[in-house]
Length: 195
Image 1 (cartoon, rainbow, N blue to C red):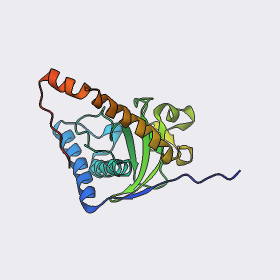
Image 2 (cartoon, rainbow, N blue to C red; image 1 turned 30 degrees about the vertical axis):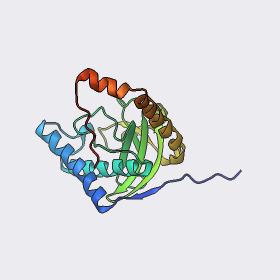
Image 3 (cartoon, one colour; image 1 turned 60 degrees about the vertical axis):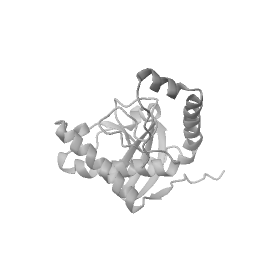
């Protein structure tokens, strides 16, 4: 039997997309600083600016690849990064997927590597798949988490039908009128921004 190589699409953001992704990172960092919040998981504050900008780039790359909207989830640490997807951006091509102990088991985690504007979508796993004892590690010292090697990730193509089902279900719910009912019940105006 011949094993097929895992498909790892490369995404190059346009200059304007890269700028918008970096702006998401800057807005996150400024928002967190104004709230007095330190870098998450013990991250060094001196590199948090860079990490936030690259995270915004990785999220934009996933959104662009799958044709999804990316809003940046400003100020909401519990929100998914893109649609219902969690994106973990790592700067080095050989780095592992990181999943933290408090991350949800049912969430989908996508590993993206690279630097603005060039990214590679390496693969994905559900949280419960990543939360295995064999992946538990603390390579940086003081920041233990689950570190899943790229070789153990699912092929990114296998995520496409799952995303389709997610958004088909959302589309069906909208057609059934749930959106309008919620807006009317709350007495709010529905505003859709596209950018």
